[in-house]
Length: 367
Ligand SMILES: C[S@@+](CC[C@H](N)C(=O)[O-])C[C@H]1O[C@@H](n2cnc3c(N)ncnc32)[C@H](O)[C@@H]1O
Ligand code: SF4
Ligand code: SF4
Image 1 (cartoon, rainbow, N blue to C red):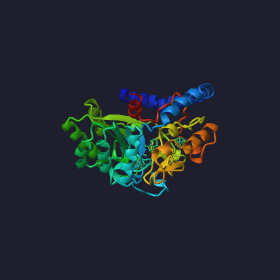
Image 2 (image 1 turned 60 degrees about the horizontal axis):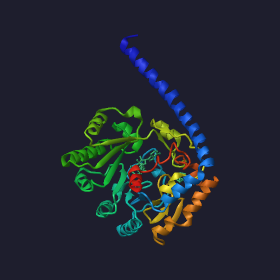
Image 3 (image 1 turned 90 degrees about the vertical axis):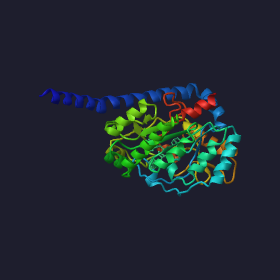
Image 4 (image 1 turned 120 degrees about the vertical axis):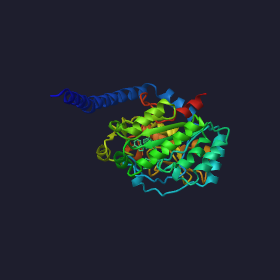
């Protein structure tokens, strides 16, 4: 065997051991720890944990609002292509009324990331951003986007919000084929140009606006000239990179085989004991004005707790519908979508605590 062949062989051997033995072992040990620690906290620390969460629940620390639930991509790991919920966009007047109420409650942080949908498809996005930006009470706002419509000409406009806005672009791969197979649309070059144009504008303006690439592709794909370029951007402080290791099932809508076919790893089913943390920290206002208890994985909105066309935000937030859901989770009587959900995070699991929660918004509320 030549030295080159030998080294290629040993690299592939190590990577096979890593993929097929070490990583699965780590995940199974992690799950065992989840079970032990969750049971411990559920049995012995239940009261203080619930009390601490109750005290933060009276005010949404990060108000999630779905400007629109319409999207222009078909990601293989997302339930959007299968969504049956009616497509909608929230009128600006209603948005303003909700924000008036939120700041009157003491709210400081807003996320425009929808359950599904893309913020740039929302025809009122910039009116919403203008509104948030001019409110002194609002300290920060953010959204995830696929970046398809984040055209170069909007870069300057986004930078006007740079003191408060954080934009996160979901990124399906560092080459055209991988991107296409994961995002379901052939827009690798287009989104790359959008990202490059934004970063060029950010560099020219000297802005410190937070801008991230949220990688949604296998780590084996973190290669190539755009990946190298991103490393450079990171070193210059122009870009942050975030990754997720495993992908959840959207309560059974996204099948493990579909994920594995594009090299993505499905999550192991979580250990379910007690209330899901999202019920305490992450309800969402839908584009139709209804409020759903979960901002993350309830694509058909089965966990409705109120309607802002009929009640106030405070009434809904302090109302009994969310308490009832929390109690059901605590009794192990999970609603169907939560039964199927693999994104569930127990409030009693110290290893996962705050894993799905925006740390900037959390820090604001601790000050
Ligand atoms: C549902 S999207 C909505 C915003 C926007 N359309 C986007 O994709 O960025 C919010 C975030 O959830 C991520 N996401 C969607 N499905 C996921 C899954 N099964 N596992 C992990 N993250 C997922 C997306 O990549 C995105 O970063
Ligand atoms: S992850 Fe985002 S971009 Fe992809 S289909 Fe879902 S909502 Fe659309
Ligand atoms: S279990 Fe899943 S669907 Fe239910 S609240 Fe938690 S994340 Fe949302």
